Image (cartoon, rainbow, N blue to C red; front, side):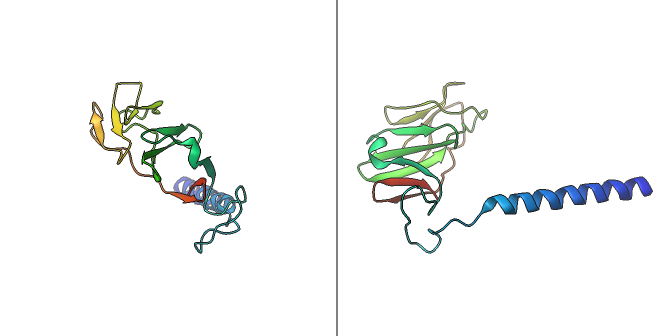
Length: 140
């Protein structure tokens, strides 16, 4: 019993430490949560990804570090999806001809809604939350 108790104590302490670390990193930025905008680069509304002019109409741009792809299916209509393919978790690498493309096995997803256009993937790319304020696109 002593060994089981010790193991539980160690696991509980590790979990509490991890929770504290995550809470410390979560940081409440300086705006955005009440719907107000803050100057670009100051954190309101999340991490800045791009300017609206960086996202081509009918296409998109992949942000590898954030594992997000932002598309603009029609002028002024911005969408964001996970850049991780739902087939085997490869990162998508291109956005061409109205699809988000995975190089690993050839899956293609719609720039409009992330739906599978060509398998082997069977599930759409999950949506990601972004905010567009002026000409800035941020992770929400």
